[in-house]
Image 1 (spheres, rainbow, N blue to C red):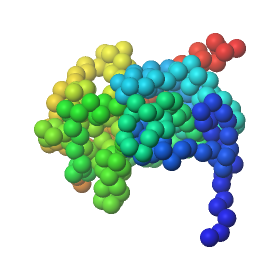
Image 2 (cartoon, helix red, strand yellow; image 1 turned 30 degrees about the vertical axis):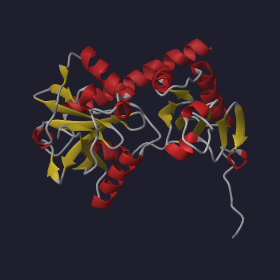
Image 3 (cartoon, one colour; image 1 turned 60 degrees about the vertical axis):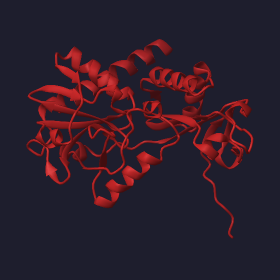
Image 4 (cartoon, rainbow, N blue to C red; image 1 turned 90 degrees about the vertical axis):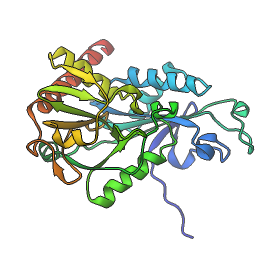
Length: 298
């Protein structure tokens, strides 16, 4: 075998900034062995992570639910240090935490110290043309379990989402919409979903087996500020193509129109005015929040 070439990228691992080739995680880490961990993916604009506090709060709450704890103040500093070390401005940032190293026999009580990893890489947004045309999606055969508390956690046990995304790729589309065990729409493989029906915003309820997305919450707050009637409800699959507009949300792509589901157009087949209104509002909010951050740091 030839010599393995590593990138010179710097990561934060358990209190230290290290190059990738010097970063080591135990083979007995429960994140690796059992998927006993969590992660947050965030977007940095001009060197500042948007809604970082919200992501850290969700991570801390999820860790508590799994029986361990993370220091959000330390993570805040680690994120900024990782961005600075890699000289990144517009970036994709990920925090991954596991319950840590344990025994060969599964026993979370044997894990004494969480493993904490922060990575960052340059982020290139989708071209404007993609937002103007919108994503296409299929309905996945992979279901969400609304009765499982794991569905509400951004867990490193991400196999369901990866398989759904794989289905989308094999079908030649951008995303896959996952239903729950009751047959209602839950979310897409890596994003939350919204419908617009007669200018009313609809999204699956939190107990439909969805991850309570940070961007999802922000969009609901924006809708209230813009006097857009927004409701959480159970949504049948057939409502997707009968809606006037559909869009997806996550922290990286922000708000992405969904214009085709199962090879059938949504509404007119083009992004709608409510979607565009919220897209503009979200971008304005990013600009405003980052301006406040820069002012406070100065």
